[in-house]
Length: 300
Image (tube, rainbow, N blue to C red):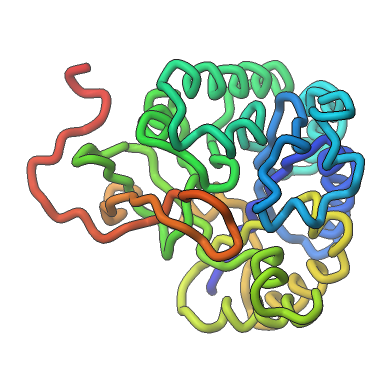
């Protein structure tokens, strides 16, 4: 049976407080699994570039966070809500610390800044849930070489930092990073709305068609701020459509559990553009075939 792993990005304080409980309710009613990737630091969404397709869907209050309105710390303000999602059986993972700054700076950031951001998110996660995070999902699929290498050094079981076609072991600049990547394989709702769809309902139908167009399992990224709020009905229609087609809706950890990690293919990661999104994003590149590749962390 084919699977669709649901990757839910929690980008903002309002998304955590309002969107997460709504999504938990819908997912439980349909017996669907999912992984919530949560930004845990200050909500400075007002500093996010206006070229982002997602920004247009934010409410006025969120668009002013960190500019004219205070920037509440999501991991503190929404602690009870996030713990409720965990207690309901859903997987929780790290989506970064200061999510807006990460999207703006990560591709060119210095190593020390990247380490500090990831360490802060990891520390807050452990304070919230009493255990270390097992997975990382870079905000906006924005990352760099050092951040990718840190997914191994920090002990993550897997990461979902990029866009691609199927799970793989990433290679960057000739080095293998021994932390599997589970890339987002389907377009997102906001991308479809920005590019082709004339209505949210049409966008949903396009996503159902996209999931049928390529055989195999998929990872679908949704947002607590969109599918958990304004487009909750569209998301529930998507769930019904996938279930009617025979898909299992699962968490990313369950998708990883169906794979033999030792046999995952090695692929280069590359940086390129995505329609409707500004700046470079991490993408699954071509297979890496060269023998004798070094492994990150060895001899360092």
